[in-house]
Length: 233
Image 1 (spheres, helix red, strand yellow):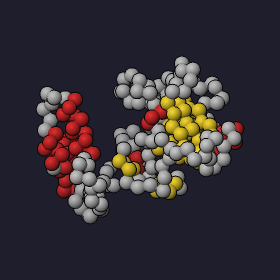
Image 2 (image 1 turned 135 degrees about the vertical axis):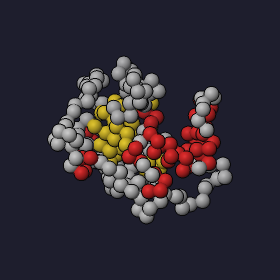
Image 3 (image 1 turned 60 degrees about the vertical axis):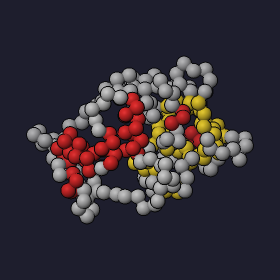
Image 4 (image 1 turned 90 degrees about the vertical axis):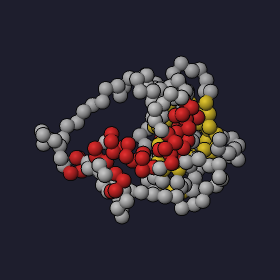
């Protein structure tokens, strides 16, 4: 469902910029010869929706439909059991799933960063994640039960998380004071919210073609903090 929304709280500061304004500012600073009128797009979001419609036919009459009560539903062929001319679903295996070297060290886990329920991209609207039963905080690390036991961890323990990329002898990126949360994950896996977990990803750890950072495959070490009063950071 695509629907219009508007913040209900006054800005915390008159200097607080909207997300489109921040993106436009970065674009203007990075591309001084750009032909895009970034200021016009920020001044009227209808113009952004017009440009989206020009690229994606599925958003036809975007500005009109988004103003209907409840918005509108995008067409998704699979939900309509529309499999195209062949009338059968086609399943494809994406190449490159095993292109990274496997982790063969037992103390390492593979971390993925995730969004909470009330989060759109990097914009966080609340601290209640109904997907995973977390309320009032985001400084958590989701871990498999057996992985926790093998590391002497219990639900609610404060821990340190350190990334250990291939070829590194020691961890150089850490976050401390996060809360261990038992969750139904496969053994060897872990999850954190982003941007809280972004600090663990090296700037040069990204896909060579797309430039996408390796937020879904980060080798990490977790340990219980001896000082339980250590705060997340």
